[in-house]
Length: 305
Image 1 (spheres, rainbow, N blue to C red):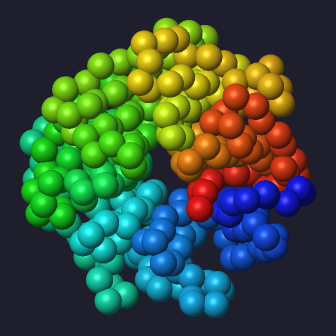
Image 2 (image 1 turned 90 degrees about the horizontal axis):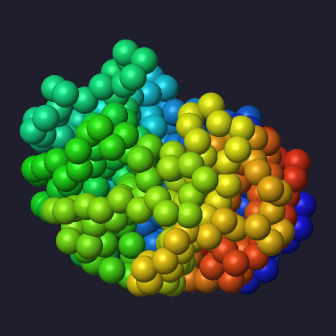
Image 3 (image 1 turned 90 degrees about the vertical axis):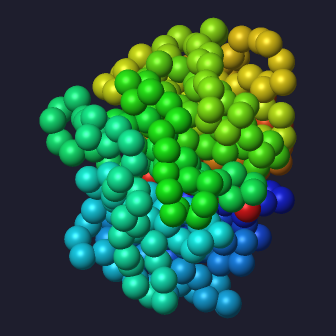
């Protein structure tokens, strides 16, 4: 492993949490870390799809709550507290160490049409929060639904057949929402009221992950769910230009999809991890990359601070 320079990088894997920064440390050994989130003071982690952990003031981790089963899929900190998505396309909120279902999420228009191609119930796959507090939940498969009132009510924003894998709110633009979809990159500049899709320059339009640096969007792309030709692409959001394949410092292709939550960006720094335990970092918005770890357990989520 190589030490991260000038940033803190948390990496959740199938066998624990790795903390790259001024000092490299590992936490929660033996736990599969599904997803990470921060409230600005503390970090939160979903482990084994069931237990929710948070950091103490000195940086160690403590278990804070538990789901009744291993159904947890995603989480995000909101102005109304920690929201946790689950299998079956449900949403729960953490309050005083207890998890309670958000009933309004179960009443959203069109919920009866949500599905999966293989016949199982849909999942709440990712959650993202806009700077002013609007909450977006990506249902797989069920599009993207939005709450503008801290989860009290919800409305659909994107056709469910776009097959969304990750929703992401641009932290620098209040109304810009991005969606990594099976049909390309969905972009909304009006909070999800309307969408356009961009695919030009991609070798395949099947996207699993999305992140944003200061002015550049990064996505993971392939030709499908079982593809053995995956890559990272970048393009400037303010420019009408094609996606450019990220190549400097990277292999020609990755043998599996770079999954939801496994790509992160902050400022001009970006990072992503793979099922094979590879971890790459860029300090120039994805123009060039360097490997900082190659022997991790399978990476399941990445977060930058």
